[in-house]
Length: 425
Image 1: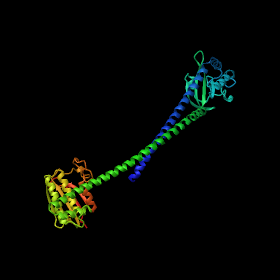
Image 2: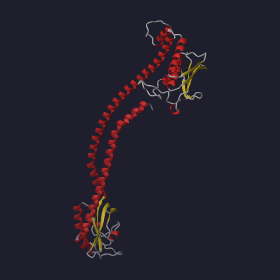
Image 3: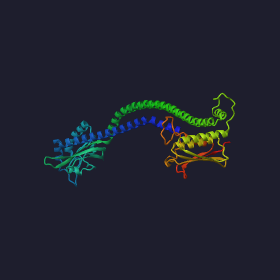
Image 4: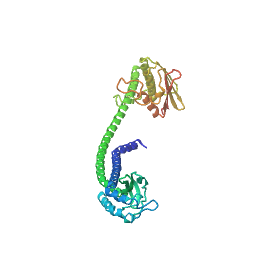
């Protein structure tokens, strides 16, 4: 994946992030609200059925009617609808009235054997209940969901206790789960419009925010592009200034040797049109090489550094080779070396340049970045930037199909740099 494509993907993710957050937040909020609403409905139903059952069980009419049929049946011979008819006649109107008034699905009253005295369906009266009732007949209360003739209901069962404290029957009150589900759907129907409105408003806000972010990102891209262009231009100017300084040393050396014509020819070669002499010809390579070496040796001597330069007889000191030698030797002296040894030879069609020194050397951790433009172990007191010389060496060698290897001098103990590049065609 290219860097530009990766940048576009990151930008798209940033722009989509507000909308994703809005959707997630709205969805979670709606889900939580739905759960809370359902729990609230079920809690309300529990209170409803429990309250109705308790109130009925405490009514004197219910207590007296149930107590009146307590001896009509036995465990082996349960009472039937005829046996319980007097109690049914007294209690069914009350149960029907309570069902309508309280909104519950059914009210069932049983005798002490769990036989139904009242039920919304007449066919179920006089029939024993099919759900658990034994704990209630022992005086316990029950609230839970069970399935009976009316369907699955959330119900409450409360014992009916006579004046002597005996459990003589049970009051069961329930609300169908289908009714609870309908209530939940109505509640959600009320909630969803608000959630939808909030989602639309938040989405519009996130879109506006994304547009603002996109505009700022585009503006930042323009600024970044301009900044990169300025950095490239600045680096190029620094490199040109660095090379210009090196060439000035050559011109100075030629002038010092009295080679005025070579100096003018050299200037014409590196800066065409700068002089008005015109047609001065090419500078003598030997004169330029001698002046360059003399300039480097003089510069190192001024810094208290001795240069030991050994050039093989078959080596041609062209501009690229001289540029590499000057920059490597100058860099060694600036690093604090007192002795710099430079050898230049030709092997298999390549120029091999080795520069060693007795300076502090290059830390192994810095070996991989010492050739990077702008990197230097020395502080920049000029404000013009450092770390240019070795970058120029690498660029020069690369342009000639060569390479630069950074190591440590075994002989002098400091740094060692080996440069190899093709012989000038």
